[in-house]
Image (tube, rainbow, N blue to C red; front, side, top):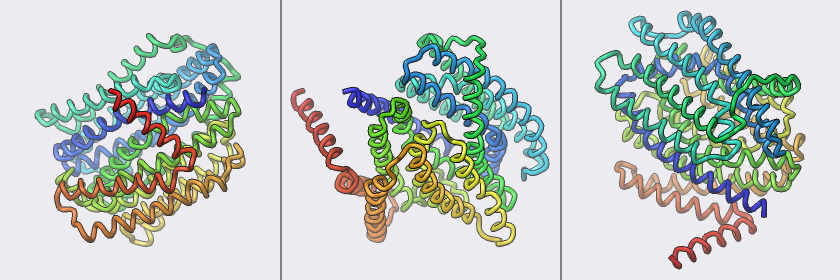
Length: 513
């Protein structure tokens, strides 16, 4: 019964997160177009690359975020509220130190890199520096927000999480509306207004947690043993997190060094598409991750395996539904969305879709590895392979004289390598059934993908996408076929019965009504 209730709660939380995601995605697509047109291609590229300098240091933030989330979920699973409060207080103390460290690094190494390495037109350096400083302050606010955000997710209060995200998106939409009518430098004002939004969101999180969770009342707490566990876990996770950030921002810097800001604009557009796709599948991950960790803490491994298998399959379905039309009709979508499309945007996005699919289906495996707490060797190997994209890409660009797409191709190859390494590690750490996973999940996923790609290629030859109507028709057909093939190929008999029973239950309620 507990297992059924957990699945229902995951489904309910996922639905709330999808409402948030769909609203955020629609508004974000509109705001991106207006911001690009308002700032221009050059300023848009400058904002992307300068903001990336700060993101380069945020790996400290990301590493501690994973640690906080893991330990909060673990202690909640054990129902030890005093330990939950201790984890929260120690985390806040550590995050204050991290915020100060980010300021120190940003105002020393970051300033040096800004003036000596970035390719920014001289007449835009003052505006770029405003962007940089506002990004530093926003990063510090995001650091302080993370323990509160982790607490909300650990308690599975996804409705609040969704509502605040919607408010944040609406405030960013308001920025776009105001920005068009401001006579002052648009790039500077855009960065200042985004910082104000970040401040408002942090205040809302702090107030909500203080009013609803007794464990969120911060008081200085020093637990040497817990501090050691948190920092040790974070230290090994930090290398993997920094490698991921270095991969994304390293690509951005390499493109800036070897090409022009317009290529950075194309990269920024592709990363925005990637962010939208991430939001599309991340909802199920956010809802399922607490349960995966709690199952491991209770040593209910069979339940954990079943949940991971199901989550990976659902992630694949969500990705294939949104990615197929985007991959085959990229040019039409970008023209409709942006109007002015930076060069190389189309190939960047198509390759990035492949990278995203591989990394997304590996994310539940990463959650299993983190649940064990034994991540020393795991993060060392995966992080090393990830960060190899920088020297390999540099060599190809420096001595091969190749086009910028080579960087994305290298990234795709390394993502595939890391996927299989993660499989090997979770088998070793949590006795994960790799053979069952490959035969029951990945093999069926590959067969389904081949069928859909062949079908979409044939349909693309028959129907050229030159209008919204044609695109919608292709989207409906591809989605329907994806759902049919997913039911036939990916669901096992138990999952099919659960799906049919749920449909029948909903139908009976509707008829009764």
